[in-house]
Amino acid sequence: MSMFATISNQTFAGVPVRRCFIRGSAVDPVGADLVFEEAQSNGTWEAVDLGFNCLGSAAPRADVVLAPREVALVARIVIRTPGRFRIRVGYGAVGDTAPADTATSAAFTVR
Image 1 (cartoon, rainbow, N blue to C red):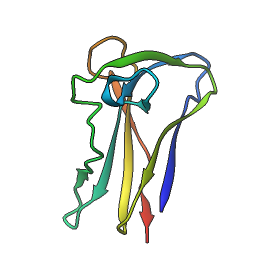
Image 2 (image 1 turned 60 degrees about the vertical axis):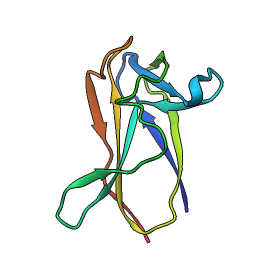
Image 3 (image 1 turned 90 degrees about the vertical axis):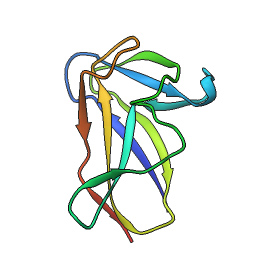
């Protein structure tokens, strides 16, 4: 099963986000800094290894601004196992710094 994750700026101002590049390529962006998490049986959330780590890596990033009311594709994720998942996206930071804030999606179930 594959899912498309999008981020939506529901404000009247631009919101800075950082795109994470796979292999440092300017033509191969992942989207915004993100963490894909799976619910554990003890009620906690654990990050799923997607093969890259935008929030904690030193990977090259490009500052972009999500325009007012703009919706942008963040990632296409392929899931092979059932479970409950959520996505956290970092935003509000420019340059080589940690995101100023994160937004967390509602949990969703893959069966």
